Image (cartoon, rainbow, N blue to C red; front, side, top):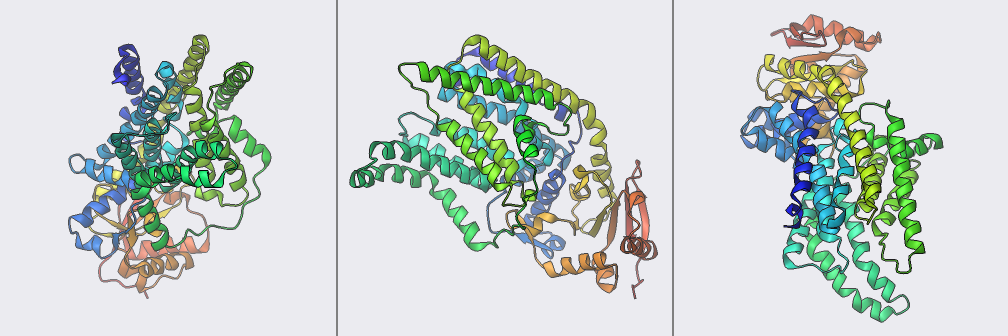
Amino acid sequence: MKFLKDKIFVILLVIACVLNTLPVMLNTFIISLDGPSHLYNANLVAALINGNGAVQDFVSINNYFTNWFGHFLLILFNLVVPAWIAQKILLILLVVAIPAAFAFMVCRINYSSRYLSFIIFPFSYSTFFFLGFYNFLLAVVFFFLWMAFVYKENRTYSRKEKVFIFVLFLLMECSHIFVFMIALGMFAWFLAAPVLQKNKFHVKSLLRDMLLPLKTFFSVTSGGLLLLAAYFLGSDRHQFEKPQNDTPWSKIIADIYEIHPLQGLSNDYHVLTTVLFVVFVGILLFIVIRALIARKNKTSYFLMYNALLLLVLYVITLFFLDKGLYIQSRLLFLFFLLWWTWIAIQKIPKLVQIVLIVYSLAVSTVFMSYYMKMLPYLSLRCYYAYDAGQKIEKNSRVFCVNYSSHWLENHLLNYLGAENTLVMYNNYECEQNFFPLKWKHPETVRSVWNEYYSGNFSEVFYSNVDYVAILQENQHPSYPNDLQFLSMIREHYAWVMTSFDEGISIYKKIPKKMIR
């Protein structure tokens, strides 16, 4: 196998991948925005499969296989290890699989530039890693593997390659439909481009020659397309908010040249990432100028054209779609990945390669050092939430209130149900049509939340909530509804525990006392 041919390269890659896992290995938990919710819902899916009646009364399996694969892996790992270790295994898999898949792709496309695979390491701990977008990152891994088999100059594939491509399309769809749709568009363009160029003004020959690319396209994408069609035809449409046009151009441009997806948990190193951007712009110009002055120009710009298209879409969508959907940030992330891929497969002078590799690894090392310093403190609250969940009776219905001002803690209380089986009303995944679970009786959930928002508590809240969990109770705002809520809790729910850092408080319903 060509990938393993250069033993020095393989040894260096393995060492780099092992060192890349240190921030995960040295911390029990890695704090992230959506990570607690994914771990909790994986536990719920497992409870459903095992026939847990309390869970079956509240949630059911979604019929659409999108945003599923990360949950599936967590369920699989959790069969043999505790939930916190299952999550750790998934995170280790991600920070190893991204550079490994990238290296495999580079080796298959242009083995002579294999050492440029190391330029991908800064993207291991991207912003999406700390957003907890595990399914999206898994889709990126499959995207790299997919390009390893698809990106061929002759655009013809053996039966074995078609099977791999078919499976990878399926895996991308089951992981994240956005990445799947980007891959679909790229594949269609990749297959059609030579035919369109050959038959610019000949419609009949164009239609005739397009039959083979169409056959290839549908033969390897049919499985993913069927799942995608089932999702769009059967699920509720995504509710986009009103257009957002208040993003200043300075912010849009800064996010590009500062390589915002690399910022992760800190904006303190934007100078490092800006220099990295300038270096890559310089190499891009070098490759283009070299190709222009060469007599025989064999440089393919297909990946770079796709990258630029994603950059244009990034800018356009900022003015037409809600920023909260993270569509723009994903477009920007994929823009950089395609740009880095295009650079990595080019023939670049050895000295330039060394400079690029060394600086990329230096940037990665600086960010990793920062995370190894900060994560023990930031992730301690995860442990307290996970531990507090063990103090709640199994199959209880829990209402969570979050008074924390830290964006990373928005879904932190979902760790309460990571190991213990609980029904929690703050399960945002059940409200989205692209996650594994959905509410069985959404009207009940809405009724409970309406009472909280209105400040008028009745039998509805009391009869449907066994426990109340509060994050940062001492930071609650002095709004009338919040004060009324806390007053109701103290009257009808008994204190159970407060975490060691006094950040999480658990209250249990007092029996035989009704709210009037």
